[in-house]
Length: 480
Image (cartoon, rainbow, N blue to C red; front, side):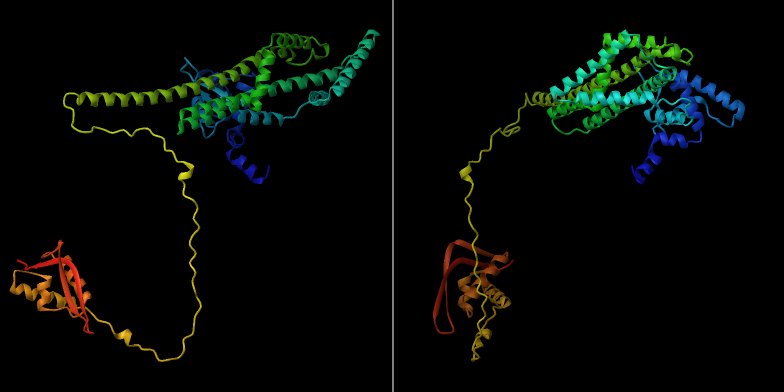
């Protein structure tokens, strides 16, 4: 845990915020009196208001009404608000009055404050004994070699036989008073820690359920994938480390033989003479009675989460079925409307189902790209005279002049073919002029190009050669 992790806890952890609150002494004193010392959970709102009013009355009697001016109900609602989260406020079935319970973080903070007072008696021997017992269980339970395991069991049997012979001979060691008190204090501490752990395990189960609900609410996949996710989550809850250890504790507590043995041991503990003067030793027989409601509530939370997830899934299925029924009824109503006056032709089309098959040999074979060979070698020409007249031996077709030729002919005739125009104005630049005449005809609205007829045009080049071209028949019409 580094500096930034601690800084994040200081800013966001509800337990740390409780210790920094102005009313922290009132909060801790009230939570200890209402929840921790009587070992209570799930207190109704009305009962908790009365308990807080009693605490506020005592404090105001010494410090005045201005010390805590708000009512007990307002304080409870404020402490259960999401930004504080010191209390958990919820409702149970068939009850309108909300229920309050400590959150795990609040209980951790309160117990830490309690530990600041120090302890008159600190158990050390019982802890060491417990550590040895845990180590033996861990090592022996993890051993996979049968020979080693048999050797361990035989050693234990030999130790037990030795103790039996010693007791039979009158040598029976008895636990001294400090040793008994040491083990008793350790027993009470672990019993209280176990109750605190139940509250935290239940909170962790609710966090897992909240994450699943968020996934279901935003789910966009198929129904099968959603079911798979839900069942996987249930397995995650029951298969998690907390889920397995909690289930193991539940099975142990629900075993009649184990419960009878535990009750017998607790009853005999109260009869130990060295513990007769210890305060509250008689209450230890109620240990099972305190555990059972807490474990039952945690187990009920797991069952309730599973049922709620199924209900959430049922709601989703119901909405989808409702949408399907709406579509079917819409189709039926449209069909009834068209029954007496069916439209002609195709009303609607539905693409037929088909499988797109692509055979392996339909794929084209690989064709390597054509390599273009570029000869980038530069050859130096000889410094000889080059005839550059070809660069200036070019001509230009004047489109305006050709349009003027057409207009002149149409001034004499209502319409004229291209051949008639060329009879009056022969071609001087050969095929380039023919192409320009066709361009003028194509862009003009008063000309017609008849592809079904042809006409032959002729001209004489500058060298005296005669040329002919057979082209589509073009007719120019005088604009109106």
